[in-house]
Amino acid sequence: MHTDPDTSALTIDSLLRQSAAELKEMSPSARLDVELLLGHVLRRTRVELISASKEQIHPSSAALFVNLVRRRMEGQPVAQLVGSREFWSLDVAVTADTLIPRPETEILVECALTHIPRDQPADFLDLGTGSGAIALAVATERPNIHVTATDISDKALTIAQYNAAALKLDHIEFACGSWFMPVAGRKFSTIVANPPYVSDMEYVVHEFELRHEPALALRGGEDGLACIKTIIAQAPRHLFKDGWLALEHGYRQGAAVEILMREAGFRSIFAYSDLQGHGRVTEGKLTG
Image (cartoon, rainbow, N blue to C red; front, side, top):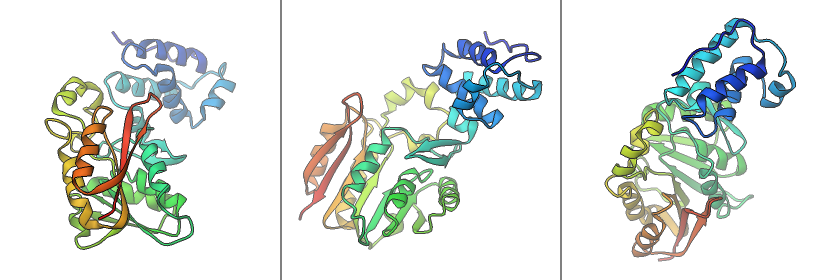
């Protein structure tokens, strides 16, 4: 049972230790979670918290922190509680209307950048952009290209546009609609997507961890491949010859994604793995 600590005379260190001990039953990263939450309340970095570990916390700040920990105990993600998540060294604002950017999605950015020249114009498309994380990262690394980002959620696009403005990235075009609908008749040299790929069964099993994020951005149907199939089938009409398509997917879906790409006319298919050795991103070149 969660019991709020007496916040009248707590130091930074004691409050962190006490809160992490309570949180560890539901979060494998309890210590990191509480450090990020307290840093958010006190407007300090984790390094600054360690340096000031013996400093007493004002009761009002401690009360705000305790409330955030309580909400974290109820399953709300840290990124939503603090309002942002670091992605590609960028501070990306997130809300309950956007998927929280995951570290493995940076693999998709790395993959895309290998196909986009540094000093030449190009057209890049990010499907289902959500918070805009992928589009923002690519736009930061390739200031000479035109980036287009689509999403079916106008609320998510509002957050993506806010992030682009905050980072002063004015070469991103945002469009609302399902997958390729907003870019009908247009072609691109590189297309990427981090589509919903959680199967119905996986969503039920992991509902506690996922319920605070938009189901629209997570659920990929019975086998998790519904959106992936749509994107692969439609992508050839929107790629220039020798253009590249790269998709993030579940760690057990790589073989199925490769088959779908091959059947759609893609070649030079290659899978990128995460730090655990699981295939997470598959790319292919449209040669026909």
